[in-house]
Image 1: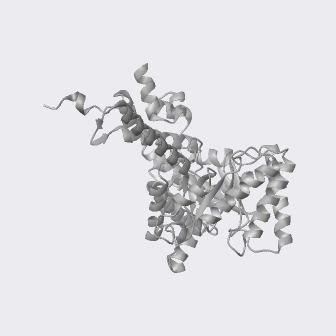
Image 2: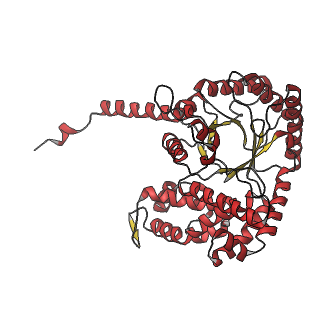
Image 3: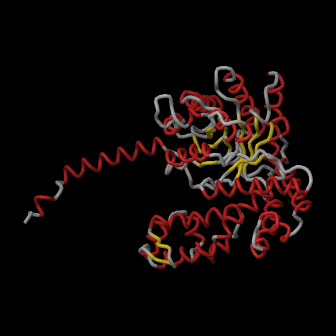
Length: 436
């Protein structure tokens, strides 16, 4: 028989092991510093900087409501377009109308890249200043969407000076007009990244700007656009994104997939460049695996077929958009791009349907699991363990945040209190209930 004393880890050795683990955890935290505690938008609307106005969200909402009323004026017509069960369409329709009235845009990106084009320097300078003026006006008037930012040009050899000039001019004018205050959830988008040095350069630009403008260190955040093959697999064959995140030095909050640039880079012909192409799924799976647990939000790309024209044409475009949105949601990408106000009805109808269709089953599973205090449970033929608990909680949080369900509905159906929901942690909820 083995003496238990002989197999006990000595205290000094245990201390060494724990110290090693602490250092490893610090390295992981430094490499993946993103904070996922905030609300992730379900979409980002891109619009050219030359068109931006302080009340853009309200104007887009009015256009979206008109498109909805013109082409799906009631719940039965919504059910027909999106192939929804009539009772589900009855629940969704008023929520879509409310969303388009109350908060039509969750995130907006003032675009100085593809949506703006190449213009003479004096033109881009002028629009950088006027767009900043409009953001300051919207900030003071309370008309900005919950999240907003700018997309600069790439930091490649040809455009790096123009890109950083726009970055500096826009932010300088905005802070001058807003008494040194940035809008909540402000972010800079870096497109067409081909090397980690470009990410490091933008992080250095943020640090320098903060120093000269006397902003608190870390104020400026940015997101990466994954739209080149080099942003998936580096030249040495390694996965590129972890290095990119590390070069961001704690400033990177999201990674957005660029469907059309990426498919073009892979040699896909224009007729087959779309969000459901297998090369897109491969790239997005790499994004998911390499950034899992990092707190960095993931966003899918855009549907480039616009719902413009006759009712039949609009319906076909909505159905295509809905298929793309549904695919993104089912594969774990809870955010995407929208390019036209008439895409907002199909965005919200698809998102709300996704969450409401599975709400009853998720409610039963979550309630049962919480009541069992983290013991593995069987509901019907579905086995749940602790890892599933956080996923079920996240389901309710995302549904509540986007407006698919209300706060009272989330409380009633999840069996959790409002404080428990806001804790966003299944482990904390179970720990508190056990102690109670």
